[in-house]
Structure formats: structure tokens, C-alpha cells
Image (tube, rainbow, N blue to C red; front, side, top):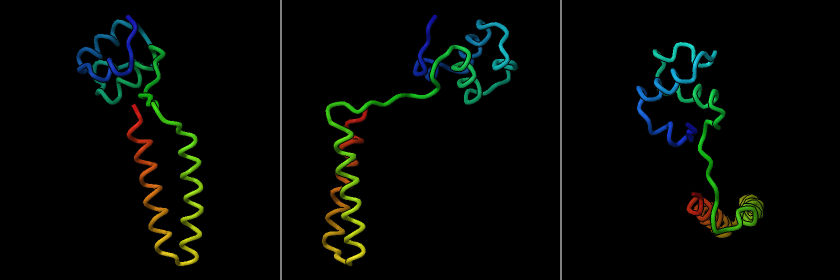
Length: 108
């Protein structure tokens, strides 16, 4: 049966050990009966050929354009800090924060 990382992560350790036993004799799964979940999950993913982390995608916005805006604002922020223009500094930091939150909210 084909598993995904999310499915394996939700399973209890006893079921993960059963899946490991079904896989046969692999070097990575040696001692699977005594492994804890945080050890067993990456080993199972390696044996099954599954990437051992979740992928997050940004949906609905142009992430690269927003990242370019953040980079431009960071240069403005640094220039305002050098010039001791605290109003411009505050504004740049606020805009950076808002853009970062926009990207974070669009992440699925």
C-alpha cells in the first residue's frame, strides 16, 4: 500500500511498527520494535521512498513579487536607520511585517 507522510505521521507507533515489519529486512529498520516514533518515521519514509517532511505551497498570490518588495523595503529600512529617520524606519518595518504575514496566510 502506498502511504503519504501525513498518513504515517497520524498513525500510532504500533501501526508504524507493523508497517515496518511488512517491509522485510532493511538496514534502516533494524530494531524497529524498540524505536520511538521520532526515529521510526524517518526510517520508514526512507525505505518507502517518501519525502520525510510536509510541503507547503503558497496559493493565490505572487510570492516572488512580494519577496522582491520585502527586499526593497529592507534596503529602505537600512537607509532610514542610517539616516536616523525613525518615521520612515517605522513605516518600512510595518510594511515588511504586513507583507510577510500576507505570504504566511497564503501558505497552505
